[in-house]
Every structure is written in C-alpha cells, then in structure tokens.
Image (cartoon, rainbow over all chains, first blue to last red; front, side):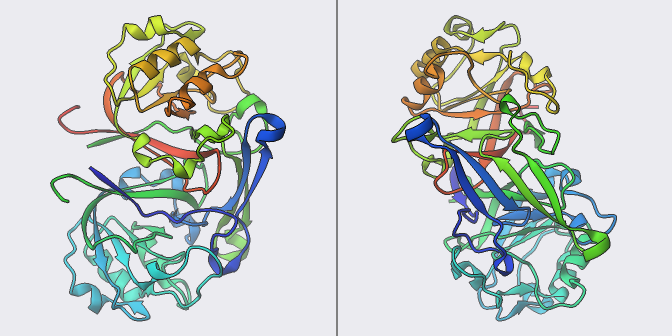
Amino acid sequence: MKILDISWSLSNATVEYKDKKTIEFEQIKKFDRDEIRETRIRLCSHSGTHVDAPAHFLKEGETIDKVPLESYIGECIVLDMTKAGECITAEQLEAQTIREGDIVLLKTTNSALKSTGNFNKGFVYLDVSGAHYLVEQKIRAVGIDYLGIERGQKGHLTHWELFTNNITIIEGLRLKTVEPGAYFLCCLPLSVIGLEAAPARAILIQSDEEK
Amino acid sequence: MKILDISWSLSNATVEYKDKKTIEFEQIKKFDRDEIRETRIRLCSHSGTHVDAPAHFLKEGETIDKVPLESYIGECIVLDMTKAGECITAEQLEAQTIREGDIVLLKTTNSALKSTGNFNKGFVYLDVSGAHYLVEQKIRAVGIDYLGIERGQKGHLTHWELFTNNITIIEGLRLKTVEPGAYFLCCLPLSVIGLEAAPARAILIQSDEEK
C-alpha cells in the first residue's frame, strides 16, 4: 500500500483565496516556559484543502455534517487536464474516461503554482459546461488543484450546477507529483457542525496491485 | 465497504480539555446579506479528535508534519476496555490480543461521556504500565476515547513512555457504537506545518468480507 498526500499544507505563509489573511498559528504554551507545547489555530472554513457543502451557495443547501462521508471516500480518477488552457470545458472532458460514481480529480497546471505566498487569480477553473458534463456522467464528487473551482462566472454557475445536482466539491488539492489514473481517495474534512465547508486532509491510496 | 465515523464533533458547544474555551465558529459571510456563507474557525491543536506528535512533550520531539501518515493509517484493533475501572494497566492489556504493528484503539466507558458540555476530569486513562506494555508489543499508534490519554501522573509518564518510543497518540475518539475487533483505520490530521498536534477526522473502514 502506498499513500500519496495531496493536501495543501497550512502555515502562516500559506496562500489564501484572494489573499485574505485568515490563517494564524499562535503557540500558547512554549516548551522553554511551560515544558509543553500547545497552539491556537485560526483559519477559514475554505483554507487550504477543503470540502464545500451546498450551504456555501444554496440558501437551503446542506451543511458539511449532512453530506455523507462516502461522497469523498472511494474509487477516484485523476484526470490529466494540464493542457486545458484557461478553463476545463465539456469538450475537453469528453476525451476522458469517466465512470458513473467516480470521484473525479482534475489535475491542471495549477498544481505547479506555489502553496505559499500570494494568491494567483489566473488559476485554471472548471467551466460551467464542464460541470454540466460531469453531472451527466453521474460522478460523486469533483476536486481541483487550486483554492477555487471557478472564477469570473457571474452567479457562480459551476458551483450552482454541481450543488443543485448533489455533487460535492473538493478544493485546494495538490497533484503535482501524482500520475493520472485510478486511485482510492480518502478525503476527510474536520467534523464541524453546521458549517458550509470544512478544512480537510486528503490522501490517495494505491494498493500494491495498482502500483 | 462500511465507514464508521469515530470523530468528536466540533461546535461552539463541544467539550474542551479542562474546559478551556478555544473553539469558536463565526459566520463571516451570511446568506441573507452576502448570498454566500463563509466561516471563521478558531480552535486549539488539541480540540476534539486530534493527533499528538512528540513535540507536544519532548523538547527535541518531531512536529506533526514529520510524523509519517502511515502511523495512523492501517490495520487497527479496537480493544474492549470498558471494564478497566479508573485506568488501563499492563495486566489488563495482557489479556488482549495485540499484534506487532497494530494501531490500538482503547474503547472505555469514556465513550459514553457526552461530547458537549463540561469536561469530565475523571476519565479513564492509560496508566504508564499499560503504555510500557504497548511499547513492548511494538504497536504503531494508540488511540483513546477522551480528550487526554492520561491524568494525574506526575511528569506525564504515559505520554513520555509513548513518545520516547516513537508511538504516536490519537486522542478524542468516539467509540460508543463500535464493536471491538479488527478494522482499517484512516485518521487524517490537518496538514499543519510545525505544530505539536493537529485536529483530525478519523474513520474505521470495514470491508465487506469483515462485516
């Protein structure tokens, strides 16, 4: 069994969406003084790798604690979308092999962008036509390798298309070193009650047969 | 495949260690005003289900980002320690079947204690003799179903015994509905850099053959 960590690391230097400054770690117990270490953590529900629930954009949408864990644990396919250009369209996805029930992770040139420093507002996004195509393929969830899955679409059409069709969204993955192909995804958001999203850790598990 | 969530839920009402008030969720974007929801999260590295790294108690101990993920992902055994009394000793553990390399989860009467409200300072803990016995069995990690793995032992002997022998500690599990036995554990702490611990989500996976 091989474990690939595809999570965005969190520190005071981590890139944040539109350069909002929400992440802050503060050591409240220090070894030299207290003989123990303890840290206060401040972050946003959308910091680093995270899962969006429908309540993020839908008035009556479910919060993250109502979304079944099976939505982001299971058979997964990493698609090579590194030649997508500015956005991923339905036409580009038609060339890929996607099975019903798959969790689809989109590997783009975003994975080459740094995890620390400033936000890159020109990230590759999933166009609404691409989202619609994924809905038609009856996938379970979709993940992308930057802090948002869309930009510049009035009305947040990609989020809307996915959420109204019960497809959850994983944002902030890091796929630079991951070969496209089939894996078992285990993406676990913190068990927060009543929130529209939650920070998560995500790994790919490759069984010995698949390696 | 069946997934059992063994995580401690986080909200403003969650029990915290010694009733420290560190968890706070604040909605910074509200649907009625902003047509979107977003939440600021404040918590402690030891809130709810979390993983302790050696840096928690050892001056030169590794931080959580240096502990291999394999320490808390893998074959796991849930032991029935509900008759343990005040603490779990070596003698009690000798009656159990533990294999080298196992991740050992201790199910005690702690799992019947509430996840919200006030801290219960009389929780069942792992006595240093029990920790030493687990070290001898060459286990990989140990988890317990309350917010600490020990209490009332001068010098934090249980933590010391485990950390100096490279065994990581999972605290804040919830095992009330879990039958003792063998599972596959996936415990994923947030990918925080340089901290002595991290909040985590933990699940048990039961394959169809094991059910």
